[in-house]
Image (cartoon, rainbow, N blue to C red):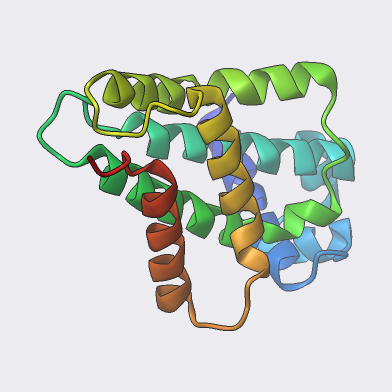
Length: 184
């Protein structure tokens, strides 16, 4: 992609995220206007609304992968329970930024579900290593713990009784209580 085309692509995508976050049903015309490009340019990059939504969804997954890739080694001296709790808070923040996608992304196909599970592999591997070292509870399967964490991260945005900092503290405490090895 030429550098100007690449800039236009990024500008449209960034503008679409901002516009849709404010108004999830905004039109392609609204997105083109916010990006400072014409509709023709927008449609050259994204032939329809679903293509634009798919590109945003791809960005979310890439950002989630970047966040998860920063996990330290489970052999590191950091407490893996707290590492995973912090990771969950960061991923919940990502979900907050892209909450508008709930209205646009159709239900996941079987392949998408498999891909989501594969994306969970670094975290699942981290949990398994920490379990073998006795630093995360080992009485529950790592796959189950992963699914529970995903459910928590996904649902935490609906909890509106507190501000974001307090919600983050609640999420950390919940994750810690789920992952902490039983006391001897």
